[in-house]
Length: 381
Ligand code: UD1
Ligand code: UDP
Image (cartoon, rainbow, N blue to C red):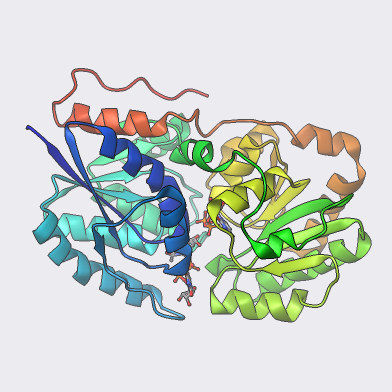
């Protein structure tokens, strides 16, 4: 094959951050024609990432609607992609992670009888309901795809246990590659961040957006955040609030008005990574932030009952705080008062990657299409 036509499909902020360095790497390979199709499951939050990385999509399905349901997203992606595949004629479709764009794009590739590579494959909580719907999206993508780029050896093992035998490569996570683009330099472009007084204050970066946390868990989490802010007046909690209307309503109602809680608009990836780098600790239910903060040496309290990313928990830099108010307050208070507990968690660890995941994935694609004699060497932490 003279040239491999690769079409990367993604739609949300985290997929874009983790696919951007890969799209850039694929664009550099002589044997690959790289194209991008965004579903725009997210609009503003996606466009911000594309701007940071200087990427211009070849196709844009523009599907986002306020308060969209999972069925809305799935059906719009499925019907939109068929025409894109007709026009782009890819040899390989690439999808990323566990969103509804991921699952629907992998299914669309299958319907069109196209090969599909799954970036960030094999992460599992083993609980089909949590994270919801991401655990199921990721499992289904694992069955639909033909190439599997597993960040860690554990992720590859999860796939093998499910009967996925061929086409599995252990590559590291492209999020660590992305940090090389974003986590350097100083200063913020966000006016809201620039207006905050950081002097002498311990900053906690907070994010919370997951669908399984909608309702009571989110109420509990925000009650804990208010309690932490009240107990520790020197702390500044900075929360770039996700654009989901459900999240914005709860955050405004439960966290608005506290002097040391700053509710701000979503940040671009550069500001976000700089904010984390300046923080004392991070509290989050995000997946990607569980990978980034350990690389930046910041302790993380995960506002979920489970995680598909146990490697940093085992390394001791991430703790599962759950979604009960009391547990979250206890763990955060310990990190804010116990120097030894803090020092034990504030270590830079990189169980998820070494910054060369994109190169390995591009090599693995070339190898799979016969353009390279040997597979890439596996990522080992
Ligand atoms: C999605 C993913 C989740 C991922 C998250 C990252 C699914 C089912 N969920 O969840 O895995 O962790 O993205 O952030 O795929 N909105 C905007 N502008 C934007 C983005 C979102 O207005 O740029 C609002 C819209 O009203 C939209 C709502 O947020 O309907 C929810 O977005 P959606 O993609 O459906 O779900 P997320 O909760 O963002
Ligand atoms: N992020 C960002 N701006 C923000 C909040 C998060 O750029 O205001 C980045 C964050 O650093 C990480 C990614 O978005 O790279 C995580 O996305 P999110 O938490 O929305 O999704 P998840 O990883 O949970 O799927």
